[in-house]
Image 1: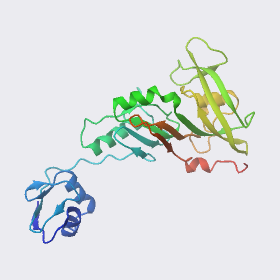
Image 2 (image 1 turned 90 degrees about the horizontal axis):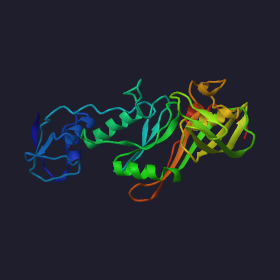
Image 3 (image 1 turned 180 degrees about the vertical axis):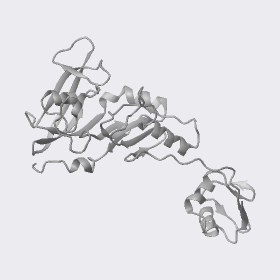
Image 4 (image 1 turned 135 degrees about the vertical axis):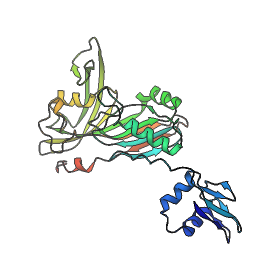
Length: 294
């Protein structure tokens, strides 16, 4: 326990704590506040801008060691958060949710721990709205209430989902629409069919060529449907697999990842109805692979 200090003149609490205990790291001082360790006249105070008055008695009485703050996985960052949604930049090689073979190392678990730490309760929850493949990086949205999740999913087809992909080869036109019927019955790979059949679902992807050269093409893709591995299998089907996508026939893998990135998500907020756009630029490791020709 630190010795009790008497306030000599009116001032906000946090600057007083910094000045009175300069030998203590500022992060530690903030933890005192967050975890009920600061007492003013024997009452717990957690507000950093609490206004102290001359004569107030301030003491530090940590009740328990604060739990360690969970670290987000390398490359993950929060793009936006409010009471209803949280939007992140998901790094490559990270599942959205658990599978039978991988239970813990997922974007869902990382964000759940992050939200619970900030809420200071183990009861806080998040809900999955959509998914990105393990091999895909970029914008990923979770809901923080079940109502928000249901509203977002009910309107998902109306939202804009934009991707960037660096593919092998050259597409037949500078812009167009890819249509196929996808069989998702196998757990690790999907297959396309020209016509509808038992167990297939239609997949529609619009594309636009942004840059081309050196045997590669940078594409901007906008989804009309959201099928598993949709972009990957449709591009492979026309002879332009995504760079690094060995599963679907890529011949090159220069940076040991699939060159597919979720770059933009435009939604209507589930509670306010406001239009919101979230963006994530192409990762530097993929920018280095871009052809120089425009």
